[in-house]
Image (cartoon, rainbow, N blue to C red; front, side):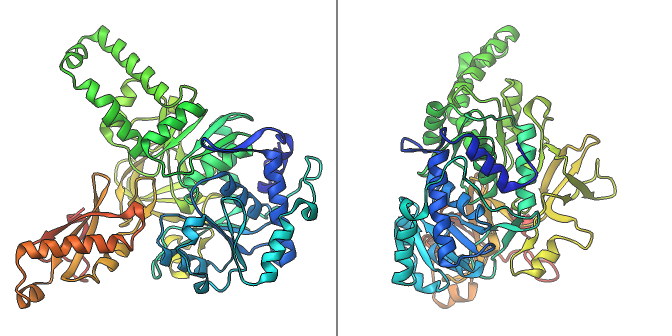
Length: 546
């Protein structure tokens, strides 16, 4: 297989696996590579005849699905720029992203599109359903008729293994515009070039062995690069069969899918692993009899072996490794999994690197590390002694983004004059280039599935609500909590009692959650008695409250 061109790699893979299953929706229909190629041909027919050009932006809004995957490959294989939008964003944020990105076309889940106002995004030629590619909204009747005409194989032509071709990118061509936030004033569209995707995929092919016909479960949101690259683009590049969870991925549903599909490689975020540990393993280990037996050396090994076998079966019993990323793993859980020799590893990355920065297979992984620097990147710790003294992690290399779309200041603040990307993470390295993360210098929090959560964005919304003078939002036990200092002058002027103030804050919490994506919902508001401590520049000392 040729691996020097991103899109040709996919075209070749489709041709070689034409009759094999490519995509399935869990407990739903399956699409072969050949059938997917036919739909890509029909979408290309419309793009071409409607005047959509290489480099134009096309957005995708919806949960993971076979049609989401086909839409993405159609845009990429045309030379377009995909704008994946998290389905958890609220309508105002989605409309802002569509306008900010200058998207000219949209593939959307019906229920999400129903909440949008197409009039607020006049640049869209059309919107089609991710359910069945039927037209939802078009700028003119002629455009709608053209979509219907082009989606007919009689007009678009029949795709076959010997005539299937796609348009490729040059290395620095923009391929994905990934928004880590939706709100106006906070928008950061990460410009991910083709070279970054190709570099990540080829690295995965060399270090995470998969082959044609292997099965994968995709449950991490494909609008986030971790799930997009390693549960979709990498597996498809070698001819795997990907099953998508098109519903909200609860731990129960994920486990059910693992046990039915029996995936060969599993990607996960810590929350899923930690919940399985707490609900399935910890209760058994805390039984008095088991606690006693664990102190007997010979029996301890037998019990650990039994727990390991049960855990492997929980994940389908066919995987060679679980790769955990997106957020730190609970140290207690990591230590126990190491003790029972469970095949898992922890990777580290960020959207701006498309996403991979470090990884090491579980057989060579070091405890408490976040993997070894990948071989196409450089790393520097901004401290006098990078092996012992914590400093900001800086990276440079093929995986790094082009910058932030329409945001030169954010780009120059993140990538310095020497080309080093400032990750905002704090850590150290060792002589074998394993990275150890010790904290964050940025304020960004990580959601349950690795989503980027910007507390300032949430705080700006909450500050508009009654009696909120100052607030700090942080994460506690995987939940978002707001600390609020109430306006003392207003409280006194309106003679508001403590109980009434708590009722007001409970209502504020409900109202602000209507403005926030599901993964960033506030669990509660906690009142504090005095002003937050501040720096000389009057910035709140966030670290005191997080």
